[in-house]
Every structure is written in structure tokens, then in C-alpha cells.
Amino acid sequence: MELLISDTCILIDLHNGELLEKIHELPYSLGIPDAIIYGTFDDEPELNRINAEQIIDAGFQVFSLDSDGLLEVFEIYNKYTKPSLTDIFGLVVAKRNNAILLTGDGSLRKSAAKENVEVKGTLWIMDEMIKHDILDKEYAAKSLNKILVEGAYLPKSECQKRLEQ
Image (cartoon, rainbow, N blue to C red; front, top):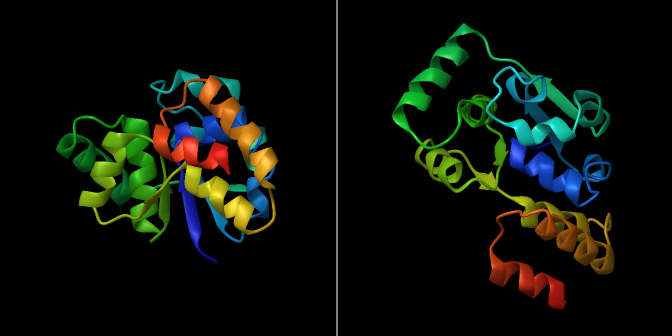
């Protein structure tokens, strides 16, 4: 089963769209770096709305890095100045596990591409939930509106397309 590693903004979008409880129904394994879920670094205060138990209950497995992984985090963090340190943990966990990185962060997407890590985002997750009959289009539209109201940075034209369907 293909592994998806989430960053903070995806968790926030899923929470805001009331989708966190449904993501485990997708035919993927789910992962989250320990640095994100346990707030090892306090550069993601938005995640305070979601606790670790909610994330684990949603089906996410917690991933830790060994000392080589930690070295890689700091090497990549020094290489790309825009993504947060916490986001780089997600990138390295995805890279080391040949996983897809779930993120909506533009700078993290660019860094992941340079590291040859496949990236998907919130809209892809929602499309997959519709495809696998986890959501109907009406529920998906309501969820997307909730996510947008909370200030998510999603491509407007793509959102509009989905809302009009």
C-alpha cells in the first residue's frame, strides 16, 4: 500500500474541512513525522488546534528519524531556506520511505521536487475521497468551503471548478 506523509497544513485543512476522521478510509497508509505530531519545534502554532490523539485516531502512523535522518534534515534545511524545519522533517520522512509528501506549502513543494519526492495536496486528497466513494460531491463542496473560509491557500481556479461540479 502506498504511503502518504502529511505536513502540518494538510492536517489543518483536513481538520477544518471535517475530513480528518475520513482520511483513513483511503487505500493508502498514512504517516506523520514525530516532530510535527508532538510539536518538537514550535514553528507550526496552527497545529495546536489538533492534538496528537486525533491524528493517531485518524490512522496516521508516527515516523521517527535515526541520526542519519536527522543529519539529512539539517542538510536539506540549510539547502532550502524557505520551508520550516518542521516541514523538512516531513520531506525527509517521505524521501526515506519512498512516500508521497502531502503539502500545500509552495516552497516545500519546490524543495520536494528538487529532492525527487512526489507531492500531492488537499484537492488531490479530496478527489481521491470522491473517487473511492468516501465523499459525495455535495459533502466535498461543503468541506472545501470550510477549508477556504479558514484561509487555506489553494488554487482558486481549481477550487472553483470543484465547487461548480
